Image (cartoon, one colour):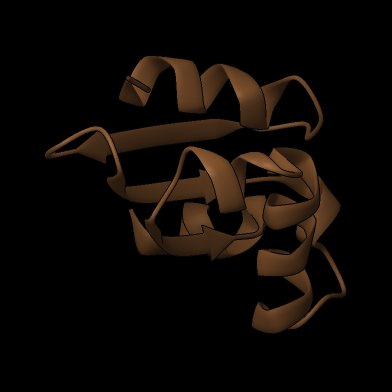
Length: 80
């Protein structure tokens, strides 16, 4: 069974994150807020693709659903 903390670790192992918070209700469905400088200059689809690339085959094997909110550091700072 995959935990939210493990999912955070998988993402941060391959993506620089200024902030990340993953919540999960049943070990296969997760929600994440991810702030990364690697998102700068990329649209939302490209940002999500970076996260999916960080997770690799886990998206098919261990994770049934992942809802994401991705932000650049500047966008995140303006939300506070």
